[in-house]
Length: 300
Image (cartoon, rainbow, N blue to C red; front, side, top):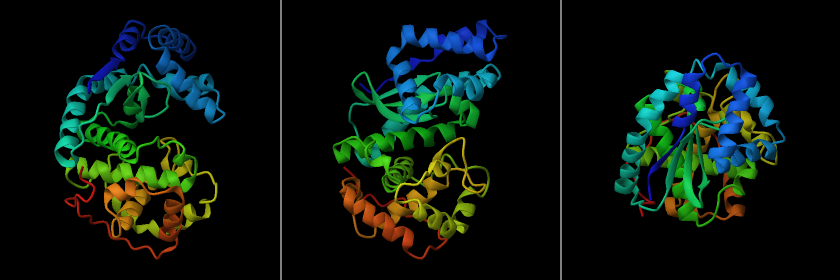
C-alpha cells in the first residue's frame, strides 16, 4: 500500500460552493466536515496545537481561514499535481535508496500544521500534505512539490532505518537539527542532485552559507533547551532568513558523513548525536556549499 489518499477534494468542493464565507463560518464548516469524515486527521491536528499550548481555533481563525478562499486555485492545482509527484518520488526513493516499504500519502485541507508532516495514518507510516500551507507558501509547482515529497519521505525512511519514532528526538534542539538535516540530505539523494525545496528566492543557499557561522553560534546557544522555532517554522525566520535550520542541519549531516555511513548516522544513539551536534556547532564554519550528491553510503 503506497497510494495517495485524497482527503481534500470534498472540502475543496464545499469551498467552491460557498465562496463568501467569513473565517468564523469556515471554521465551523471545517470542524464539522473533519469531525464527521476524517476524525483521525481532525484529532491529529488539534493534538498538534495542544501539545504546543496553542488554541487551534484561534490560529485557524486568524492565520488560515482569512485567505483560504483566495488560495483555492493553488490548492486545486496542488491536488491535481500531487498524485503524480508522489508516485514519481516513491520510484526515485526505490531506485536511489532501495526503499520500498509500505507508506501512505494523504492530501488534506488543514489548519496550518505544515505543508508536509511525516507521521502515521490508519496505523501506517504516512506523509500528510496540507494543501492550505502548500498554497500559502506557493510550493504548488512540480519542482517544489517533488522536493517536499522527497523531504518528508526522507523522514519516514529515517524512521524505518532507525527502527523507532523520531518525535522523542525532536524534543531537543540537537535532535531536531539531526532529523531535519537527515531528511534534507535524503531529499537530495532521492532526487539525485542538490535540493532545498524550502529555499526562499534566488540566492537562499548562498545567504545561508555566508551567514552559517552566525546561524551556528545562535543555534549552539540554544542547544540546552532553547526555542528554535525561528530556524524551522513557516511562520518564523532567523534574522531575516527563513528555514535556516534546514541548511544548518544538512551541513551537520555532511559533517557526520566524513566518519559514518548514512545508515550509521540514521541509528546514532541520543548521547552520540548530542555530542556530535555540539562539536559541529563549536567547530569553525566555512561557507562551502557544494555536495557530493552521488555518494550512497546509506543505500539499502
